[in-house]
Image (cartoon, rainbow, N blue to C red; front, side):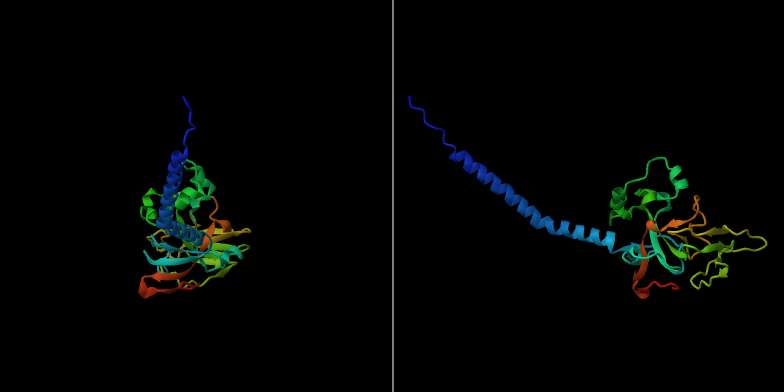
Length: 243
């Protein structure tokens, strides 16, 4: 009986056809989702290094910033210089850098990746699901490195013994014979690479006056500065030092 060699040509053709179909499926998937993936990576890169949009969820910066205002936060300039007095900055939550607040946490701090994911559009529509250490805050810089700052119980500020005119503040802390101010006074020297921030709504802002460690904001925690309001349309414009 003659033994003939096995014919592998059929098997090879099927393997080639399977590889071709697999490559075709990958090509179709890339054609459909590739642009979306690239757009996502581009937007993520822009958000991380250049600029991003933010909305205002609270009234701590009234009247300068209204609830639900939409802003552009620029991130490039503060990579090369320190913040200036009067600039409105966005920064990481004090719950992520204030050691006293961190010590009170029932669980470890979330990673930067976890915070980045929870702050993506659509996901961040559910703020109650976001760890408080992942939130971002927005306030105005009132004192910088080397300054001596005094905040009175009325919410007025003295920088290096000079009373600062703040036309953007119209809700100072009330004091009368029958009303005790709801604001705390504070005096502090600002060390290197730190600033002190307050909300323009001086009577209703959780800011450096209340952060338990020392009230200071490290410059490295600042994400960027607010430069432009693009919503609502009737108030589009720059956000300047004395808006």
